[in-house]
Length: 629
Image 1 (cartoon, rainbow, N blue to C red):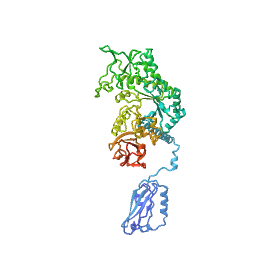
Image 2: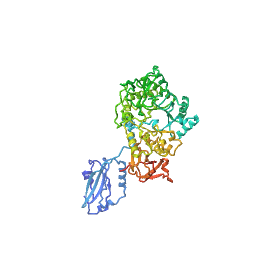
Image 3: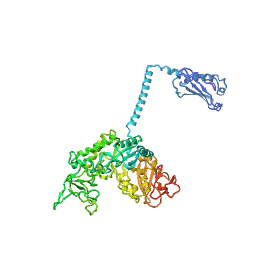
Image 4: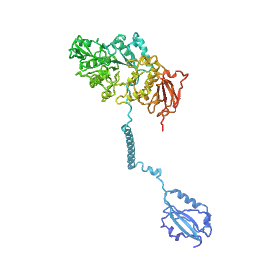
């Protein structure tokens, strides 16, 4: 064999039995072809049915020269079948001798061509498979949608707060006969317009019944100063067109001696004979007649008065001119069911009942025992416990009957049923234990008895304890009671206390002159009561500097508010920066008129660590609550 020549015919690796591959070559670097060195020629076998093509009879040096035709042919062949297996043939020159090294090339990966795919397009198997997958996709999608809806529907919800009733939003303003005496209907409508402008939507007709409070001569007639029942109907209708609800105050415990029930009872005319509490007297050892027992009236007098015509004693827990009705008689209870219905049919939206703590008495007429208070005078009302005449369990049964009867006449159960007097916590717990019988429960004695010297500690203790009591829910705050606030203190101090009470949890009960003529900021603060912060927000109270009573109203996602009342006779400056959720800056929302006295201007914003407070004044601030470490 000549040097540089390769006889492929004698090489078993490339004859017709060697996989029939087609050989191609790739040029190697020139330094690999240098004479006397190891030189290589790479030949690729690209077809299993062809014999490798190589350049015969040329040495390594001669391989550098060529017209490129063979390489072009091989490249074209390679491009025609890119996906077939190839075999690499490498020519190796060692010391002038040629060797062949054959390697199987890596298999190339490629998908089907469009033409090949179309061959399966109409194949029944693939058509069916596609439809199955298509259907499975949409079934899965629908299942996911149904699952998502089920999660939303069935997942535990954040319980929405119970919507507030209409009597839990607006203050209640008492309208008395003297407020409308001599006024035309147009003048009364003007009063209603002014109340609406101040965002007041409840009017309570106080002392409207004939005979006056506690001395009612007729429970379905009205005071002559008001006019007639038709005049009341006109007021109710006019209020309704202004989105104002009208409620009625009445005292069912007693009546006037002029009531026709009492007159018939004196004459023992049925069924009125036992409409009042009658009892025979006792005969003493000296033969002198005396009272049936030791019961006392709330005015520290004997609770029994002899009636000469009837020849019996009648009970009166208040004045001797106002005999107590006998609620151990079911006929009397039913009389009031009819009375309530009469007023509801007229358009009245609720009732505030007085003296319900005294409705029933011990039928056995047992003597009262001494009370827990240290009172030495047995003639004093407070000397006794009054277990037989006050706060008896039988009162609750009557109240429940009335409430149930009112509800039966009110399909929406949207009638106010409240008491105009304070109620003890333990009694309220029993009354409202299973259902809310009494709306707006009151415990306002600290306000009813207050004078200008009421201090921050009293305000915080009494307000906070009643709000936090179980079964209170939403209290009523009567700031006037039987003696108006303005008769017990200077009007500007009264206004300040009213301003303080407007944003408490609960409903303030006010007089008409507490509202009209409209005082600065009154209407703006009343309007705030309809915001979620005041309907559902938390209440927290504080005493600052020992003299300032302050409370915050905060609900997540809503503005926060702080109300502060300075009870001292001295101006002061307070730091509230350490109170939870209070930021560094607060904006002024409103204040009582006396807050601005002796000041040229009132700032629109204060820093939390430096807020001025004028004597006996109230300041209302708003802020964006912040979280503190």
